[in-house]
Length: 302
Image (cartoon, rainbow, N blue to C red; front, top):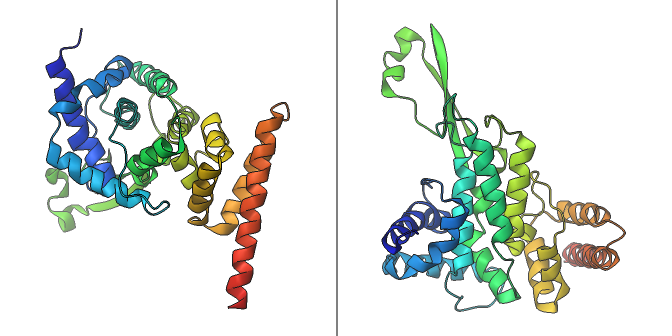
């Protein structure tokens, strides 16, 4: 059995290295993978967390929530939120090329399966207030990026994923004809080059993660990858009038032409046998398209 002290220690690592940078900004440094069992126990370690850092995180979460709803407070982070943060940590660890060596590459498929299992076990928000609170925590998740570097010199080259090139490779730049190229790799692109996994495997795991925070899924619907698709959790949000209003607001914060096209496409992808879900997705797409058209007409008239 995992000791309470160990749970508290791992939770503190998650708060400082993953959750705080995600919400507040700054370098996000994934810690050791959690796995399903430990991730679901993290809520037990909350009393041991840094209260000052927690208060700062809560203040910023409220600011994020107020972009779409007039709220002055949010529920505290629940066990499900900490488990989802652990899932994000483990998803990022999938892109760590030092996680395994030539003889241990099976770690990547096992970790991917663990991330998927964990996301399946994290319950979707039971109500609109919880959906808003969870979005306030994970709103910036798709803004995460990794900086890769490629160093070339007169006798060779080397690439570094998410790491700075060692100083020795940068010595005598002019003499050795050293060139350094850097590139930002967004979270959705990090699935390239994972041993034993296809980019599609990674994208599917990221898409599943997003369904656990449905308002975030809707707020990033115009993303390129993974493409937005209606899920039980996002349909649940737009099924109730308060959630529908929030969903409408987050849609208007995205490029309007892409929103209309995305919702129209996603509605056609809901299987016809799910008649109620299809009708709900189509009605929301029509409502958003009509609202955007009206806004355009008013803007033109002004």
